[in-house]
Length: 350
Image (cartoon, helix red, strand yellow):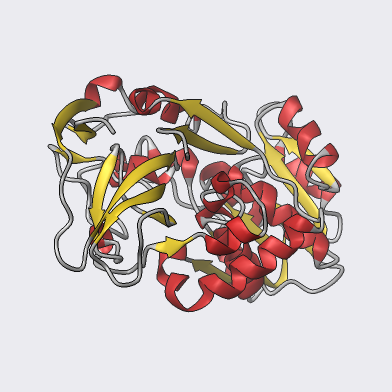
């Protein structure tokens, strides 16, 4: 076992996308767990669009990452040493242990005011699925898609579901759940390659390249009967245009606004067409999946495992090797270069 813990610390707030100069790698002795704690070796790190919000000097749904501290991030880890009754050495867990090799946990995510318990990945291991799925289709990504579409969107068979950022980690799963429920799925993406992937790999009925197509014309063409649920991952112009096409009583689900994250400190572009929510007696609902972990994670995970094993949900993972490469790789999210869930491999699971 290495003698030191590498910690990727945020030392400067980003001004646009991330720069490697925003981070500093520091080495400190590996900590020892105290009573009621356990030491984990981080194996995989999730890179998420929300990282940019967390690194900004502004209040969002969690406190900003303080300069000089470890960058926040979801992880899959192996318990190395434990003085906690619910965790033993060798357990594989998912938590939020940040951009570092090792971390001390007490079973509760201390970074976010105790809202998320560390989750043991026994069910995923028993199902024979890759550990990485605990951060992608069976982790926060899949749970976000499941909760946002089914609990908030409440689609009915035959509904039209429009998804922005549909080739991303969450969006690709939203469309497939929509198809499982008998809905028509239409997605937007930023390249012809991604649009082809939406149809061929993820089962979308139609795909729109927002960089080359006129959104107003494309929504009219591919959603001729209007939109019953709009699942938004990008915000900005796409959200504004989608509002024109919502049906009476539609649900607009705000999962993210990645098109706005790198300029959030200067102000976010709001929807000019919000009055269509009034005209169509529609609802717009924002949510953060972290709020729903404790009570719903087990049931949602079980259903997602069933769908994955049955071949009803496909997923993509893009794995970058090396913790030291996280600071560069994360910009793939804001440049639209990632295909599926973006992860960093920190250490071998064995």
